[in-house]
Amino acid sequence: MEVKQFIFNMFQENTYVLTDEEKNCIIIDPGCFFEEEQERLVGYIRSNGLKLTRIIQTHLHLDHIFGCQVLFDGFGIQPEAHASDEFFLDIFPTYGRKFGIDEELKCVPLKSYLRAGDVIKLGDSELHVIHTPGHSPGGVCFYAPKEKLLFSGDSLFMGSIGRTDLERGNGPELIRSIKEKLMNLPVDTTVLPGHGPKTTIGFEKANNPYIHE
Ligand SMILES: [Zn+2]
Ligand SMILES: [Zn+2]
Image (cartoon, rainbow, N blue to C red; front, side, top):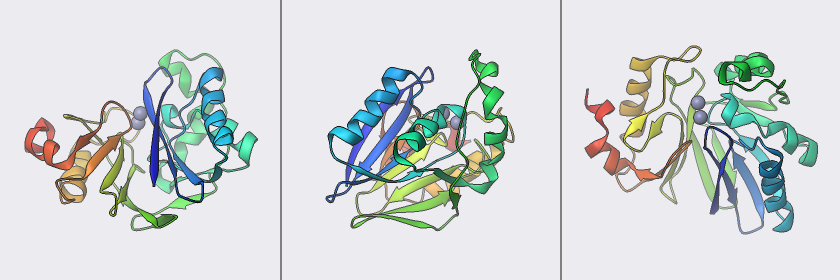
């Protein structure tokens, strides 16, 4: 499984494209907002001859779904996310105003729901869905055991954790999610978050101030 990272939009969001040996690909959190960014993501898929099979969301905050509409227009694929975050799609059209984005935003509906314990296959790789509510109620992480990779969305960052002051966020719940469901992963697991640089479970266990409270 090959992992390509893009950094998109005014929130510097990390979008990941995972590709198998047959050139099937899955996108995690398409955050491309500006036209140039959307062309870059679509161009990456087309110029490499990739077949987009699924779009999976760690959660449905605006900075992680800006690109869903353009991917649907180009490839006919709708995003999948945890049901508890679906309400964000209802408030999305005007949600940008909160962050200084005046234009009306558009996102296609979900194709289906992701659930805790789901296994998403890509070639001979697997992504296990771990429900980590707190940053948002339907926040999930994707864990690839063979590659020892964790796509942590906005739950866990290098030396930090996601904000919990947005709709239905919950600080104690987020810390509980991280401690109980992420810190038990192998210490040499590489963590690829929704913002900022990568880290490891071992580094966070030793250094993340939020999980030692
Ligand atoms: Zn978020
Ligand atoms: Zn984010």
